[in-house]
Amino acid sequence: MSPTLDLPPELALAELQRAHRDSAEIVSRTPLLTARSVSAQLAGPLLLKAENLQRTGSFKLRGALNKVRSLAPGTGVVAGSAGNHAQALAYAARAYGCECEVFMPLDAPVSKFAAVRAFGATVHQIGESVDESVALAAERAERAGLLLVHPFDDLDIVAGQAGVGLEILEQEPELGTVVVPIGGGGLISGVAAAVRQVRPDARVIGVQAARCAPFRDSLAAGHPVDITAGSTIADGIAVKRPGKITLPLVDALVDEVLILSEEAIAEAMAMLLERSKLVVEGAGAAAFAAVVSGQVELDPDRANVVVLSGGNVDIGLLATIAERRETLQGRRLRLSTKVPDRPGGLAHLLATVAATRANLIQVEHVRDQLGLEVRQTAVELTLETRGPEHAEAVRQALRAAGYPAEDA
Image 1 (cartoon, rainbow, N blue to C red):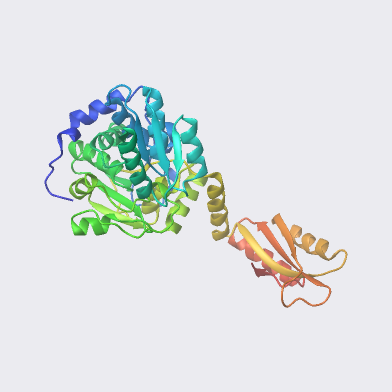
Image 2: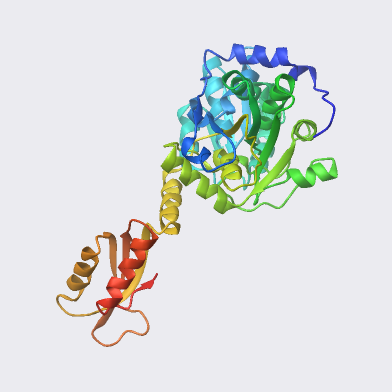
């Protein structure tokens, strides 16, 4: 973070407050939730800024509204986005009667694609990344006379996103640390601009997914640097190149940028679902992941806030992550064993399982497994247990009954 604070006039505190006030009729004031069960295990109090509960499911509505509101009547807009910016712009355009087109990557979540269309936008699903979709949107803007609304590299967008920071400061004046996910840098630039002008001694920490984390190299180089990105469950922050506007803002306003693994982000999503009953997408859970994985030094005396930036996640992915966590915690057990291939063989195995009080989720015969004897079949069991000790008791009970149970 730069020792001096030299912000563009569009990000002056009075301008941020004006943008926030002007959005109040449409933007929801999202809650700042306690996380008592997690805070008890950490070195400081933790609060969750639940932007996943915002209209359109993410913070992006704030910036999109601020941009569309500033346009001349009848101006059409176009954008490239993985989904959250697309939904927000489509919603804002509908609210102000604007024509809207959106370019989305081919691997954008189905739920986000459907939501954008439901808000009335024309959707083009093309491109291998957000960056490609933005480039295609720029070409369309030039051809059709539409205004390109960039998802993050625009001062009007950044000023709108600052509403998240202003609300946090209103809800918790004694702010010590705020942790924010970083994609292209629009959200953290806005939040940091608000925090630095109201609470300059608070720390602002950014978080990126390891498979798409361009900010460290770009900050070191002093200019935006392209990276080779991999697929990530944090698709909402999968931006391969920082913005020309947001990179210097992050350099000037942010204390530290952390990088999180896919495993840490998936675990954070599952924890938020199980403990806080919050549906949060991978990008939205990144800041929480940084805290619970121990990468953030919390303020022991003042509030520590993590921004849950969005909740637009496919149900299938959420189910997979929940099942994965159950398995890692020993509450979901997959076993492979062998039974005599004769009437009653499977029934005896299942009776042995039932006696352990494990819940049978799925059973599958595997008759073509190598190493099977004549008149013998393999069986794969998926069981729900009460935890690691119960899972081990199930294994031992099956082995004691003559079944060579091995983890599948």
